[in-house]
Amino acid sequence: MSETKQAWWAKAVLVGGVIGIVCLALGAFGYRGGVLGVQPGLLMTLVATVLGLLAVVVGVIGLIVVLAKGRTAERGSLAVGVVLGALILGMMGPYFLTSVPPIHNITTDTADPPQFDKIVALRGENSNPLEYNAEELAPQQQSAYPDLASLQVAEPPASVIRKAAGVLESLGIEVVNIDEARGIVEGTATTRWFAFKDDVVVRVRDTGEGSLVDVRSVSRVGMSDLGVNAKRIRAILAGLGA
Image 1 (tube, rainbow, N blue to C red):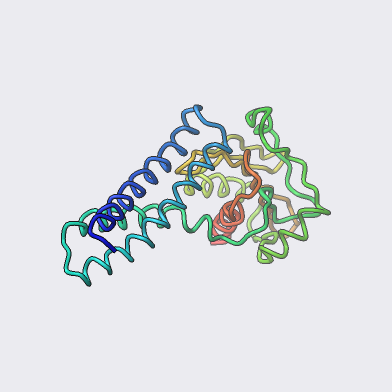
Image 2: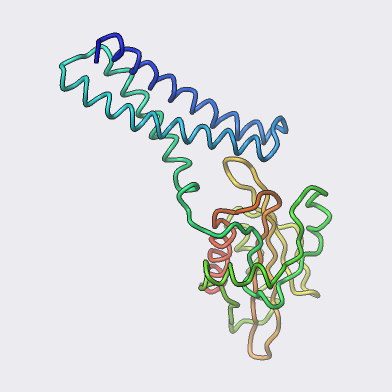
């Protein structure tokens, strides 16, 4: 490989890493700012992830080559490109490597899922539907998240409802509605990077000896939630069972 090609290779790795970071930022902040829709925003993050992967793979190979030949001119560009690529992969890799079914409506009670109330008016007309198709969703959910189930607690419903509101707040979920008469607490979670909105409802029923708790978490946009809703439900159940 000639020195000219090696210099071009190093510059390409650096440029690829920089463009990847720019795409990652544009995808997220473009969506948050209302400039980009969901699909264009996600496409930008996909492009960023591919560029990050190429920067790491090609950059590492490039570093091995230039170090073996004792060259120093290209080391800086290659190293920076690899670091930028690794940063992208570190942020987005877990999402793309997650193996979960393409669903976004998760509940601990697939036969009789908790229903939303006040949140319905806040979701917007372009949000995913709230209907739970048990025939289609339940088998996929139970296969991917067999641990999700109703929670039995010894406390009375009124106490559990107050505790549920506190748990949601501790998880960074905005509490929208507390209705002791209906036995529900509703909240909205906002994801950090894209600021996607996911809606949550905790239902508490009197069992005579305590309370039966069910939780449901639904994404407003997108097809797959990449396991986020199930993870959120686990955290809520853990907080209520503590």
